[in-house]
Image (cartoon, rainbow, N blue to C red; front, side, top):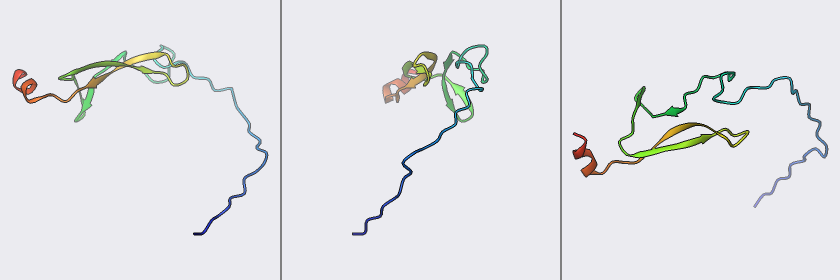
Length: 84
């Protein structure tokens, strides 16, 4: 078995530019407009789920919820007949 070694630098210099600060998602100052609730995006259209519920989507930076998304379940044959 062949083994290889990678030499890593012992010191790293990082420059951080804190001049760019974005507004929290879901706020009016955000750079991307967000809805508070999302359904399933299937075939280019937003469709309501047949079964399941909605769950919170959390902002990675804060852990705070900013929207809900559809958490769908697969319908059973009985469910499919009931929705006809």
